[in-house]
Length: 384
Image (cartoon, rainbow, N blue to C red; front, side, top):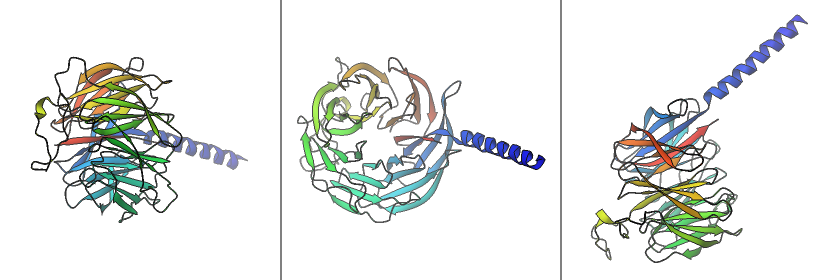
């Protein structure tokens, strides 16, 4: 009897120890790709007392490492390098420390401006701005992508700028900046070629330049940011994936001195229209809080973040104003808890941390942390 009691107590202590270890292993980690330093900066988002970013390490990649995407379970991080030879870098995330462990590197069929992992974690999708192409790589059980794309095809439009699925995983949305349209592709994760290569399209106003987008919790609304005019278009999402525009609202203040821009293309490109980039709108990223109450966008010419409140019933936006941020804010992200924003700047040696007021949605700057050269994409992962 005594032995049984001892065994029971020992087992209980062991279980408690494992539970404590599990709790201790959880963390929130921030990753920033540095295109000129050819690496990824990793930080722990410390939330207690004085919230701040605690540097962890820098993981090697390649020049022009830019778009990143994490697996839905927070175990893997993927980063695409846009310099030749185009490549995809895969990392395992240490749940206890946040360190990135390199798994493998595979060739990519094009220079991908955006990558995304589907809701099941089985597929890595890519969109090429310069090549007008879309790709799909199968992800294995260990998170390792197959070396060859299962799909690689022409998108059907011009200048695709971002790619990801809706929350039901039935539709892939790809805004096309060059043809002012948002193309919708049926998606089936169970198929050998999951993306339907024929798409339906909805046009924006001419010169809108759709870039990045956010899907609201509940999957009912989609928010698309214009790179060239600074507007956010709000769409009601139908069950079949169709989008119906219900609002178009500027992300810039009414007294802005910025004017509509033109697509940035290499010097000498046929048909390129010269314009003054120093006064042109140049928006970049759009993110929504996990509870769907607040939305934020970035604008690179003025180096600002814009803030919006969201009506949960109608999906419509109310503009709240801007705050200054890092110079050239190409990317930013919201932590999974919806309490903090981390913003990078391509022309800045630091990243900024902001808190989100849970009642008003307004941002408060908390501090800066050093980062590599050409910081652009930000991804935040919470481990269990």
